[in-house]
Length: 407
Image 1 (cartoon, rainbow, N blue to C red):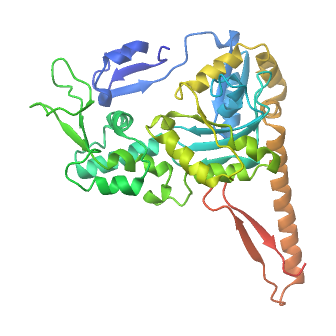
Image 2: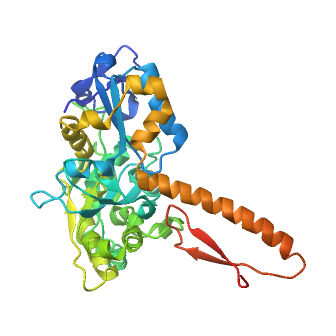
Image 3: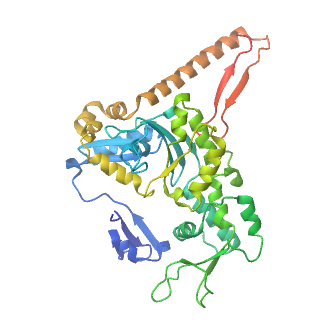
């Protein structure tokens, strides 16, 4: 895969790196990224784009308008990455399950997405009422590590790319957080590690790396102690940084328990992992241990991980784009010119998500009407309403029901 990018130095506008030439630049802190489209004629090509779950309608409409009005693509398909599960390698060589739970822990968020009908003849059907989101992603972890390092050791506030490399090279998920934290209290311990920061002034420039050897005279050492596991721990215990959400294992359990009873056993046994955060050492084992404690004893818990979590969505999308069913999924430019963004909404919005939206809207209308009636009928009678909250700290947010003690 060749990076589709043009990179230039911030202070040398005439120096550019195109595509794979970017690897020749070691000082990533002084580069400016630009990610253009390939030099092709969009009017002769189809376009497939993935979107995050619960994407806002205004953003979806902007997608549609740019694709057809600005770039004029021939046809276009938009879907969440979890819908591409039938075309991924997560469950290979096992057969595709009828029901699965996709855990996508990426750059901005971590989504837990149950899907049905995972067969190659059509994209998977997402069970929208059971989708959950944890507001912790790779960006938050990198920024938190940057704050810790800048406060304790070196000022790295302008070196996000380097800190991300440090995170990927040094961090791991602890199997016992309290025990490892106690180990790190010792001056010398088996967890502490030294990371040599990149040196761009040497000739030739040297990249950053983890070392166990004595430092050289010109080396700039970044000590890594409990930072190695306290940063990924946020995925499992967001309260460590003040987040009110439950951790990833609890989010998965909350999602599965919201499914119909006859699907829960299959869902516990088919949990697929994707996204860059699943590459932390110890992530899979820690997640399994905590899920096993949360799952009913009669259910088997099985985790599967794609071979390439960072690029699995691209490979799945490429497989779908080459399949014979892809044209039937797309909206053509002629259909868009005739029906506008409504043509895309009808084609891309799943039936169960539309039903959920309609039920929510209907519930709000009924609640407003009922509230108006109660306000008129119960004025001066001291009627009280009780609020029942379902699920704290899980996105979509807690749903409240109004319970009238005197119906």
